[in-house]
Image 1 (spheres, rainbow over the protein chains, first blue to last red):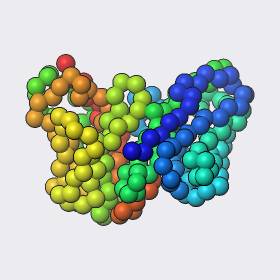
Image 2: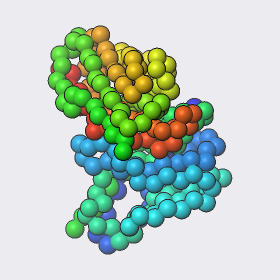
Image 3: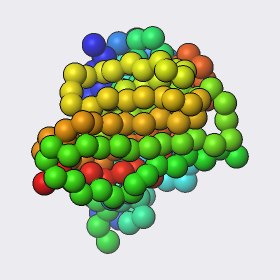
Length: 111
Length: 114
């Protein structure tokens, strides 16, 4: 059974600081996704990582994928309050017909 | 462009009552369709997915069922709700036929069972 683990589950950081969220998964997969969820809202796609070594950047967020280590990272640079949200990683299931999500990381950026 | 609609957005139901949540996708054909639940807390649990009309795969045994009567319509139902059915229900679709690919989520339906 595919398991996806994120850490930390809760992250409180000061504006301007850098931090990394980690996503580990238990089976071989070349495809990993990052989503953002604002409180009470649905999920919004952030990054699609489709191969080993893939790196995507959007503003202050950068995501990378190491399929050999079964690890993806979401790096936050110089955090701002607007980045406060819950971030999920998700990995394709064994037959590629579903996504299995991590538990999510609640990020709070303090002014 | 493709859009996904879910309704109702909010629902408060008594224990033992029936449930019907509906999801419709526009602007695409033959989408993969998914129902996820997010209980209080944060994690998303896959409940059902469908790769075609009448084709439903259930991920966990539970009090819920799903149906896909039309290509772009996905319905989540229950005959008798339990307290544990409370949560935020999210419908999603993907464009690729056999690989999940990127999921696009609806706005969600918040269900409270009292």
